[in-house]
Amino acid sequence: MSLESYCANIVDRINTGVLILDLDYNIVMWNRFLQVHSNKSTENVIDKSVFDVFPELPRRWFERKLSSVIELNTQSFCSWEQRHHLFELPHTRPITTDSVYMAQNCTFLPVLDDSKITNICLLIEDVTDVYHYQTKLNTVLEQLALSNRIDGLTQIFNRKHWEECLAKEFSRARRYDHGLALIMFDLDCFKLLNDTFGHQGGDKVLIKVASLVQTLLRACDIFGRYGGEEFAIILPETDLTGALDVAERVRRSIAEMIVEFQDEIIHASVSVGVAVINPADTRYEDLISNTDIALYKAKNAGRNKVFAINELDEFV
Amino acid sequence: MSNFNLTEDQQDCLQELINVAMGQASDQLARYLDTFVYLKVPSIEQVSSQSLIGTLNPSDTTVAVVSQGFFGYEGIRGEALLIYQPKDSDKLADLLGYEPDELSVEEQIIDLSSILTTTFLNVFASQIENQMSYSAPRLLASHKGAISEHIEQQSYNWDLALKVKITYQVTDYSFNCDMVLLIPESAIVNITDVLDRILASF
Image (cartoon, rainbow over all chains, first blue to last red; front, top):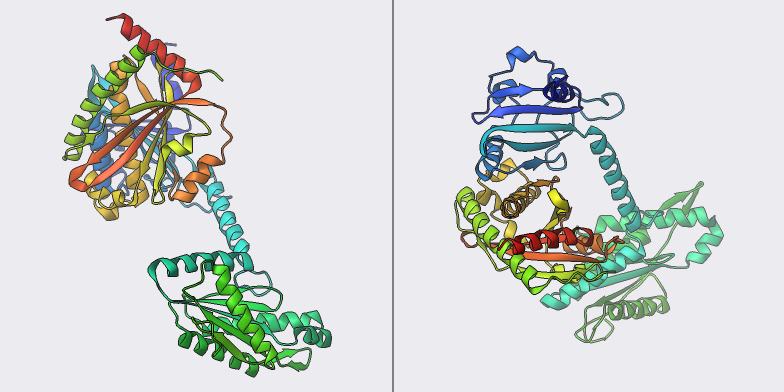
């Protein structure tokens, strides 16, 4: 067997599509891989325009891509990550993946004759498998990132993520001299509630409080579970009046809230502390401390109350 | 860990080869992109794996790094990194001659990277009577934190690399990017062999 027939034999048996075009985009040659997958007969393809045989090709893009190969005499690439496929071909995992068409990595090679470009060779690799597993991996990574931010019980942000958000919002407010308010609230006598109704009753109250408060907030407000029965809300671009308004709505809504638990009705209330960013605050922790002080004032004043510290560190 | 400091002659020879390649590459790019492309005088230095991230100097605003491997005869091989800033990506589709809705920004960045890398290295390879092949370009990361993380998390199996940094400027599109060629330790001796051969032929 001659070397040429060895090569021809191999080209026809590899699991990569080989398509050779002339400089006018007509098909000069293709291999068995493409013939089988596209299910077209070779005689209907040779000497035809690649755009007629594969009308799904994005023509303008394809022509510009080939022009870089021709003018710069260099190879070019097209990955499934940016473009899932160029050619609408079936693939080898139709049963066990959800990909309609074969995901492809394509390489465009200049073919030279005596250092002059005469043709362009396209190599088309089936990477449906890679696509499938990478997509699954990305989904898992997204879920992981989400569960890393979310409190499992209440489905709002957990302490760690909430605090990271506060650090960002704090430095943003400092940099642009914008307003920033913080609300922290704590369920009153939560231990007693747990002792009376059991931890499942307590959990139900926490879940209900979280979902209720979420409905009272703007999209830009950042709501998280700070500790056991303590919650916190970051209010960007908000002054004391605005924050007090939100805090009062939170207090009243929870006081009016009814939680049904095992044929019993649970009532709850919260004490709320409010503070706004203070010129003297250098770290976001200072803002938390001020809010905390206001919260304890509210608790000591008999619970189910809102207390605030304004930017002059005075209670209102 | 070996030290592969190039001799002064080798360094000059490499610098000259790169200068010539830059000239021809910028000419080809100007024709293809239909605008002037300036390439700044390259810096050639040796970097350790520990100092790599520092010398790449991704700023807070770096948006993308694209990697593309290259390999040729005589054991010449390495990895090209293209580093982009955000303002650079605004008019890329226009620069490349595509309609913006024809391809994503990521694809534009990858496409341009491949064009810059292969055009330069093809000319460079022909200078040393070699021929390059390339892997498909890959977007390593598309924002700064991820880039530092990506590079810092690796435990490298190399200590030193030869680093060649070339800055591309396309003033009509107020576009800049850095191309950093990194030749791993194991391939540097092959480069110096080639340089010695060229020096001997003069």
